[in-house]
Image 1 (cartoon, rainbow, N blue to C red):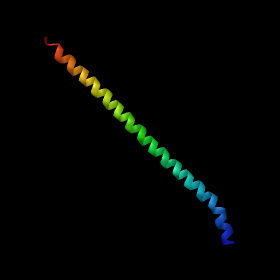
Image 2: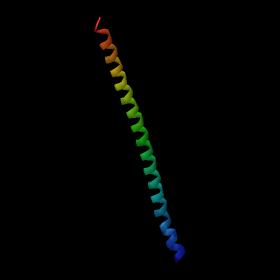
Image 3: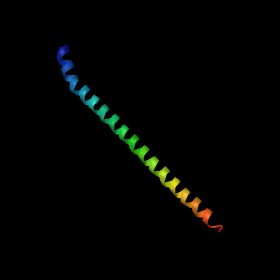
Image 4: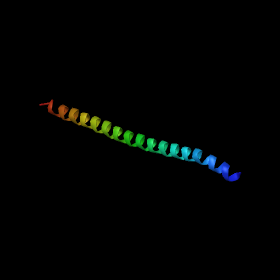
Length: 61
């Protein structure tokens, strides 16, 4: 009887482990996307600031 109960629980455990693995993968991908997004925004803002800086230097002529 114990063996049968264990066999019945096994698919649930596998399903839970599979779901847990999926959640971990999704979280990793979200983290990667956030890092890429953050770097892109930083580069764009830095680029805009550099352009403004160079424009300001040319004006006093």
